[in-house]
Structures are given as structure tokens and as C-alpha cells.
Length: 199
Ligand code: URA
Image (cartoon, rainbow, N blue to C red; front, side, top):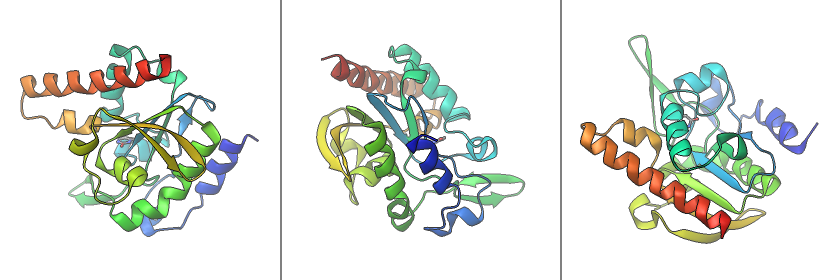
């Protein structure tokens, strides 16, 4: 069994915070195990929790389009989340995403550190405020970091982090024009990450 498979197996019984109690699955990272590029999201959504894989729901479909447009092959990257369990609230029959709090983000950080140490990407893309908080710590704001390549040490991993928006924020844009503009900005950030790898 590879080290990543071993970590995923251990994470499957994680009780470091309470989120495991209401989640269907621990959704661990997936992708190329020695990828030079890691993408970190927030937490699994409703679909990811049901299917047990990261970025397979609506945000994942948008991410797939953005990766395609930026010239990145999803199969060549390593995709994971800052938090491995879906945090949700019931609204009727629907399960509505809740933002993980600082304690939950920090409880899960050890898994992210371990994944980065094993995969060893040269560039990690932090998508959204929760991914940024997991990597840079409390007080992280996307607008203060966005689009910059910042050298950082996270646990046993050292590399560059490029922060950008979360794909779900693009889905929430007010109208088509705003959505297209936000999507173009997201693609531009991903292109910057790809170019940093080629440099
Ligand atoms: N949003 C995320 O941050 N991660 C997923 O896996 C799905 C939606």
C-alpha cells in the first residue's frame, strides 16, 4: 500500500473533530501521487460526501472547465481539501454547506500537511479562504494574497503557494457577466500556477 493510501485509510477513521459524526465519508485527496501541482479546496460538498471523491459536484465541474481552459490536466494534479468531512445543516431535505470553523480547520491540518509532504508539489493552489487559512493561518484573506506565488513551509513541505478564489464563489456570482469575469480571473490564476511550474 502506498503512503497516500495508508494516510487515506487512517483518515477514514479520523475523530480529531466532530465533523465525522454527520458525514457519510472521509473524502481524502486524489490524483497523481507525485504531482508538481496540488490544488486545495475547502471541504467536500454534498455530492463529494455521497460519492467519496473530491470535486465531483457542481464546483468540481466548474473546476474541470477552468483546469481545461488553463491547460492543466486534472489527472496530472493532486486534488484535496483543507477539511476532509462535509459540514452541513439540514434545510428541509437539502443539506446546506456550512463553513468549517478555525478549530475544525486546524484539527484537519495534519492530514493536509502529510499529503503535501508525501506528494511534494512545487506549487500548491489554495482555492478560497478556508484553504488559505489552513495553509497560512488565521486572518488569511484571499484579496491580500490572490495571484501571488508565496514560498512557504507547511509541516514537512516547502514550496510555493498561489492563492485564488474558490470555484463555488464563481457559481454564486450575481449574474452571467459577473460569473464570466470571475471565471476568467480564476483561469488566469491557474495559468499563473502552470507557468510557474514550467519556469
Ligand atoms: N468544494 C470543495 O472545496 N471541495 C470539494 O471537493 C467540493 C466542493
